Length: 443
Image 1: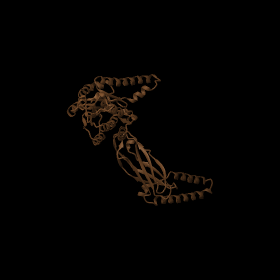
Image 2: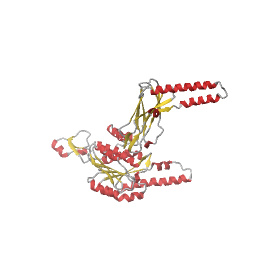
Image 3: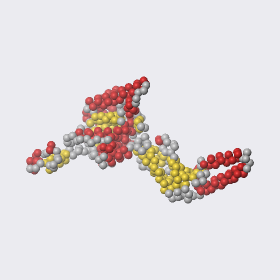
Image 4: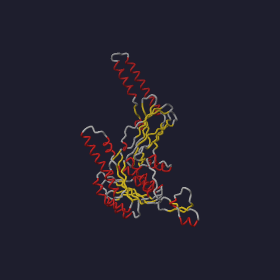
């Protein structure tokens, strides 16, 4: 039974059968071809038996292994590697068919190569998930064939291998590395000029040429009879919360990824940067109810807690209750904090409905409302209008685009910080705004 399950006919045999059939048909008019056709049948049968012996005479002749990361990174190209080893004494043709998870909707994965005896052959390929969750890899199928190309033998490895897809770990690591190497500008992150001083005093030290004369401590100078200056350091351990609206407004997809997942990826990257700068980070998700609340803490291990909570975010995409969010913040977040609210408004009327709650939150905290440009509308606006219908479409698109900017201005008039960004630039713009707020001492 195992033999039948692994036994397959090679495509080339159909050519051989077609030649035999043509020989028998032609022998009707050329009788001398008839015995030759039977000789060809006999030769084919001998080759068939020899090929079976070649492929089945060696036990476990092909070894295959698929190597995947422990966690796949959502919205990124994740590299997978497959290792092949052959024990056959001849050059073996192999076809690799990997049964990728159903979420990728890819049913034509195929890789062809040749193996020699004892050779370890490696090949890489990439997958790009656009949903979080468990991804089940099916069989790693390897079809081996000898130089005779009569039959193929199938080998099966690693059936039902589960790999979880987490928020964009790759993106987080990129920003982390660039922050350490001081190359954030390569990703569009701006250097912010520090305005004034933060409020956290560190020490009094001797004046050194180049120190800011505005920091001279005249009392200490009089006592020491030499110039002394106050030294300040960045305020640390300030509470920062990423608040993610998981309502229906975050369901809109761009480049295959929902706005909700863009916000989740940004929260992970931003939280990592904030923790590295010694601030406390926390997280809240809400829609009709408060779904997740992670208090702001300052320790690197806290990032794993945030990662797990982001991985497990689920939503039915209902209408969000901003009044409930305000009440929760009033009860649970007692210290003045930086709040990054990831949401979206497509119409100015939607903003006006939530504006009283946003103003109430902004009275106690530094609130940054993050919402999104509709990049598809921007593409439509940039197109040339060649007919009346296109003109109508461009006019409506420009109206919606203008409304986004009017919403941004209205929030700024009330003293609420805003980020209006394309989805793909969300993490960059969020970190920039964080650096700006820290530099200006607004928190």
